Image 1: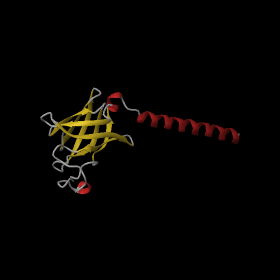
Image 2: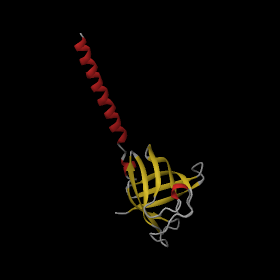
Image 3: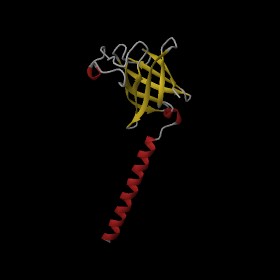
Image 4: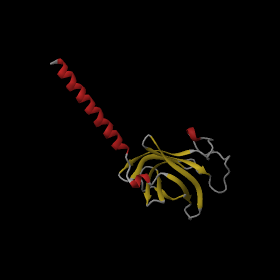
Length: 155
C-alpha cells in the first residue's frame, strides 16, 4: 500500500512539474507584434531627421534598450550631465535608457525611459507598427501628457 502511495505521489509531482514548466514556457512566448519591437533602430527627431540609434533586446522576459549611436552633434565621449541618480555623468553611448517594459496585449508597457538630452525619466509605452517601425510614448503621470517618438528598423 505504501509503495503504491509513493508511486502515485511521484507521478503527481512529475505531472505538476511538467505543467509548471509548460506554463513558464508559454508565458515566455511573444506575439509577432511584440517580437517586432526587438532590433536595431534609427530614432527620428520630431522633424523627421535622423537622431541617434538604439538597440532593443529582451532580458528576463522584459524589453530594454541601449544607445548604440549618439545624436548628431554629440560625441561618443559625451555624458548625461543633466541626468540624476545612476545615470548622472554616465556615457550616453551604451547607456541603457529603456528598462523593464513588460508585454501587455501587443504593447510593451510599465517601463521607464531616460532622455539623455534633458536628463528626465519618463514612464513609457512601446508598440510596433509592422515589422520596421516602432513607436515609443514617454509620459509623466498619464499617457496624454507626453510625446511619441518614431523609430525605423536598421537592416
